[in-house]
Each structure stands twice: as structure tokens, then as C-alpha cells.
Image 1 (tube, rainbow, N blue to C red):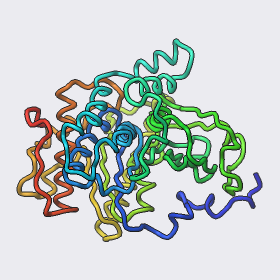
Image 2 (image 1 turned 180 degrees about the vertical axis):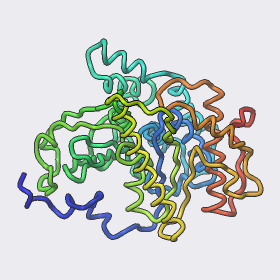
Image 3 (image 1 turned 30 degrees about the vertical axis):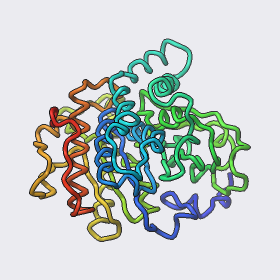
Image 4 (image 1 turned 90 degrees about the vertical axis):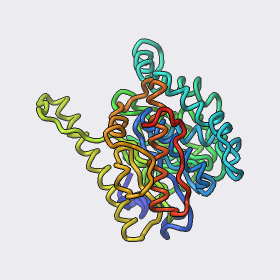
Length: 383
């Protein structure tokens, strides 16, 4: 494609959308990070606290990647049944939201997907989709999500190098174009968002180019980009799920259950393991820069809201009455592997309690000082 066809949008260093170019407007966005089942279950506690605090009903957008997208998609399907405008109802929350997520957390699907993808017809990604359909989503599509808040499930387009966003009104890559009201299954969208490389990645979508909006003007609007889309984990592009909320709203709530780069005393020198380590370093740096951008925006009053992480020390909030969360215990929860591997009942309960507690502390410290202290969903498990 000739260089002179590249539009202003395609040459911009980050995603540039006409309806988002004027800066953030009044509204609240929630970002759910990646991190496998660890993140999926941790975010359940976060949603639980937001629900009880009355903040779930204030959300305008929920943006998610990877493990966070599993939680977000279940929340989206449950939204109308939760009746968030009414007083909180624990039984309803557990039946329609908490229970389905916890049942999936009791199943190992990544190993089955890998074995099935190797030994049986179909790819690893297709096997993961089958598990999501079986345990969570059935035949649900993006069109089964609510209109408000808007749920945005993010993946990374390997071909364009940009974010691929799935939502009810459209799916879009700012370099490729947009498909309105996509009939993509929720299982496929979540499988793309959680296609952790290299094992669970890529997820390939075969599309009809005619379904893209005509005259998009994007640099890559044409085949093969509009006929065969190769996607990987949304966390490759943005592990906080921050991109689609940051540009849109002035209040940003970020729940981070992502992993952390560990020191490597004896670095491997063979090309394969050395290359993997270098990629980990690049990923860690990008993740750190996004987090720094976010924290600076709070400090400079460019954004309102709060960030909390699975590796946060709850004592740092300097509340006189935080829920009891010893740092050594919460760090043990943070070390749960980034996999789609079965978690036992106690670990699930403790991850939910920890997500609930750190969200509670962040809300009371930085968002609403009048908010009453919450209580662990599973007090007998603690953290």
C-alpha cells in the first residue's frame, strides 16, 4: 500500500479515534488486568466490593485483557440479573457471577487445550474456546452484553501490532477498520484476549471483508487484514486494559493482578530461552511505563480514581482500619502461577478476599472517604 495513503490516525503513536480525540469526559471506567486464573478470581473480589459499595452501577466502561476478560465477560452476561441499581444482594451476586467464575476456576483448561490441540483436530485456541463455551458462555455472543456499561474485551492483532477490541457495538483495530454489531461468540472473544503466548496463541478469525465498514481510510484496511485476523493475548499490547478507558473517561479504576518479572541469577544462554527472557524484559518495561503513567496522572490531578494491585502492601494506604491482610500472605497469593489451572477452594476464597480488601482500601483512601469499611466475603478463609 503506498505510503501516501497512511492517514493521520494510522501514523499516530497510539490509537487515535475521532470520538476520543478531545480528551477524557466525565465518566467512570474499570480496567481488569491479565494474569490467568489468579487475575480472574482476584477480580471477582474487586467486583464484589464495587457492587456492595454502589460503584458497579456507576461504571460507564469495563475494559479487560486476558484473565480479566473472563471475569468481565461473565459480569457482562450477568449484568441485568444483578440489578445493580437496587441494593446489593449477595445471593444474586453469587448465583449469577461468583458461582460461574469459581466453577471454571475448579477446572484445568490450558493443559487440556494444549493436549487436544496437538492430538485432535483443531487448534489449541479452539479447544480453549470449547472450554469457555462449556463452562461459562454457551452460545452467547457479544450482542448479549449490556449497552451500558460498555464491555470492551481486548486482544492484540499480531498482523498490525495494534489493539483489537471486541464490544457489542463494534469490533475494531484502528489500523484495519471496524465491523459493526459483530456476531462473534463471547467464547471466541475471551479466547483471543486470553491467548497467552506462545502456548495458547494465536487465535485466528476468518472474516468476510465486506462486513467491515466501507471507506474506513485506515492504513491496513484491505485483505488479508480484513479476511484473516491473527490475534494473541490482550496483555501483549496493554496488560492493564488501560488503553480504551484512559482516553475516554476522567475517573479510572484499575485492578492489577498481573505477574512480575523475577530476577534470574543464572541467565540461560541458548537462543530460545535467552530470547524468551528478553521478551519478558520488554513486556515488564512496557507494563511499568503504563503503570507509571497512570500513577502520575492521579498525582497531577489529570485523572481521578485509584489503582490497586495484587502485590500492593495494604499498609501503604495508611488507613487506621484496613481489613487484615498480612503482606507475606498476600504475596503468597500473588505468586499463584499465571495459568488456566485448577485452584483449590481455599485459594479461590483467599484470592477473592484479597481482591475485595485491597479494592476496599483503595476506594476508601482515594475515591470515597465516607465509604463504610467492608467485610471479607469469606471471613473463615481470611487471606
